[in-house]
Image (cartoon, rainbow, N blue to C red):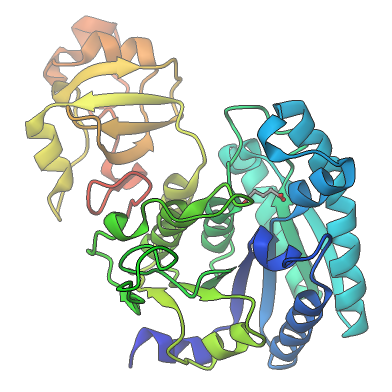
Amino acid sequence: MSQRETFKDAKRIVIKIGTRVVTGTGPGLDDDFIDNLARQVARLCERGCQVVLVTSGAVHLGRRALNYRKSNEDISMRQAAAAVGQPELMRSYMEAFRAHGLLTAQMLLTQDDMQDRHRYVHLSNTLETLLTRHVVPIINENDSVSVEGVTFVENDILAAMIAAKARADVLVFLSDEEGLFTCNPRTNDSAKLVPQVLPEDDVTRFAEGAGGPESRGGMLKKCEAARMAADCGIPAVMVDGRIPNMVLQVLDGDAVGTVFISRESLPGRKLWIATAARPNGVLVVDDGARAALLRPDGSSLLPIGVTEVRGDFSVGDLVQVQDTGGREIARGIVNYGSADVDAIRGHHTREILSLLGHVGHVEVIHRDNMVVATNGRPGSCS
Ligand code: GLU
C-alpha cells in the first residue's frame, strides 16, 4: 500500500495554513477559503478525525491595519502587527468554524515552549484535552512576545514540531504552490511537480529561491519542515490550499501535491530531541566519531571523539553534534556540562576520573538520548 493510501485511515491531522492562502489577494482575510476549510474540518470531525490548525497571517493582517509595508518594519513593529492581527485572524476562524458546529481554541507558542521539556509536556496535555473534547486547536507563534533571534521565523517548522509532538498521522501544508517543483515554476516553463520525496532524496536544489514577499519561509524552509516531520515518522504533503476541498483530496489518497514519505516513528524522548527548537551548545567531533555515530548500529559519543565545545550548557541540556565541516550529524542530551566536556574532550574514558575527580558516565551523549541526522542535513534527525 502506498503511503498516500494510508491517509484514508488518518485519525489525527495537522494542517498548516500559509499567509497567502488565508489572506488571498484581497485587503483582509479570504472568507471563502476559511469557510471552505471549516467545512472540510467539520467533515473530517464527522469521520472521527482530530484536526489541529497551525496558521500564519497575523502579522500580514496587522501590517495592513497599521498601514505600513514590510520593508520598513523593525522587530517592535512586527510584534505590534502580530498583536493587532492575531485577534482578527482568530475571530474569523472562530466564527467560520462555529457556523459549522465546531468549537475552536487559540494556542500561541514561543520557542521556549518547545524547548523546555516540562512546558512541552503541559502543551501536549492541553492539546490532548482539547482534541478529546472535539475542540479544534488553532496555533500560531506568539510573535508579539517572541524574542528576536529565537523566533521560529516561520510557522512551517512550528507545524512540523506540533505534528511530531501530537503524533499526527499526516501533516498538510496549504500554500499557494501546487507542491515542490524541479525549479521555480514562476520563472521556468520546464518546471515539473515532484509527486513524492523519499527520505534519502536531497531536494534542496529544487527548493532554493522560492517563496513570495508575504511569506518568510519559502520552499526551502517548507522542505526542511516537511523533512523534519517525515523523519519523525509523520508523512507531510504540500498542496495548493487555494483549491477548495484540497485537504479532503489529500485524505482520500488522491495524487495531489508533493508527499514527503516518512520514516518509522521515533519513541517519545527521541521525538522531543529531534524537534526541540534550540540546542544549548555544539560539540564538534572528529572523523572517527562521526563514522561511529552515523553507522546504522551506531555508538554513543565518547569524550575521545570530541574536538571542540561551543556554548555554555549544563548536564541534561540538548546539544548539537557537528562534524569538522560544520554539518549537524546528531543532537542529544549531554551527560556533562560544557566545562567538564571541555576538560575531558580528546581523552580516553578511563582518564575521566583523574581529569574531573569524578565519573558520571563514560559517554558524553548516550545513544539512547541521541538522534542522528539522516543525510547530514540539519534538522533531519532520526
Ligand atoms: N506567525 C506569523 C504570522 O502569523 C507567520 C510567520 C510565517 O510563517 O510567515 O503572521
